Length: 479
Image (cartoon, rainbow, N blue to C red; front, side):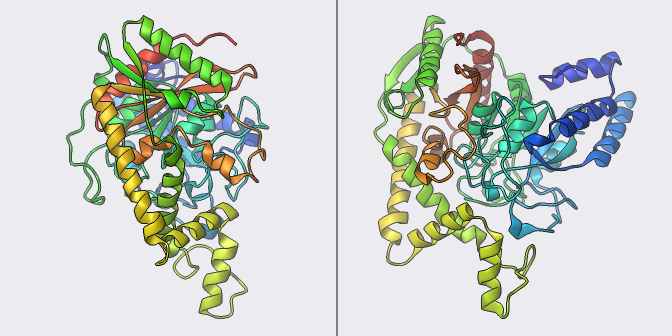
């Protein structure tokens, strides 16, 4: 069976009668088994997926199938799926099963999506390489000695390695876009509040957003269209009407496009990524778009602001994991205080502990104003400046990552280097605007390069249409 790049291709085969959903599921199950060394899946729902496929085949025959009939997806291990394990790739949630299904997941189930398994990720979505998972790192299919990116590394590799058609991930500071760039797939993060966060294990609640990893912009648009919209279980969800994104993929003839001059002049930017991005901008200019350099004076403050705010929120959100209510409980505890200390010390990995401690520190009475309050003010400046740029221009184009996928273990001991891997992705997260990473060529070693595009809040239909045009009309330079 051939690799499918979109649901449209799958549906064509299903309609022609040359394939069934059951056969498609068996194909993906075989691939998962053959590529188990990539460590993309923590759990495979083989029997359930087969049963779902049979049910969808029956609906297709009866003409009652939903819009996602034939789409096989995986779920990042931070999204609730009733009666299935939910661990956030952490030891501290050993044995826990979800009592309900996340709104975003349920809306896809209602349209006959087939869920094939639960995917590996950085522990509690904290990481940029998928090396912090309790279950070990996810390996990049292009070179298994290199990282997949994080935190949605398993979700990205599953799409990259043809283990499913699409994946649901989450994006707090680039956790969908960065692994998408490392793996050569499309990673889409919508406007904050566009998709309900109900059923998403919280890391940083004012940043977290459900996103998609796909092989086509069309699939990203359809998934967004079906997941988006108000939800009574999420008071932060937008009440705006949801456009028919999948029907709005025709781009305008010309756009105003900006790129941040300082991004292209960063000393840590890989020369091949810089050249690829400049090439993309030049091709856009040759198509008749206005392409201009702009100044963004807060680039050096983006990563510190992001980590102060997200660790503060993580410190609060992760206080619920104490060994009393659910999950792992330290076996050697002797009283309540030791139960708390030992459970959290044994259950959380080093990176999660580091972020909890940092967050607790910046929220402490002596340092609250010096760090947390100041970071909130800087976030406001970053958001206002980004919004102003996106009023003047239709899109911001910049690299997704400063480097291509690095080797496993290469940055593990250098926390600052790992955090700086997010330097180009966190701007969209701090501003709450939608962003996408699309594949744009490879470096000399054959490792994928990602091109990132940002648009104004709730302008996803324009972002998706332009992204589709970019994937279809721009040609990466040969390496």
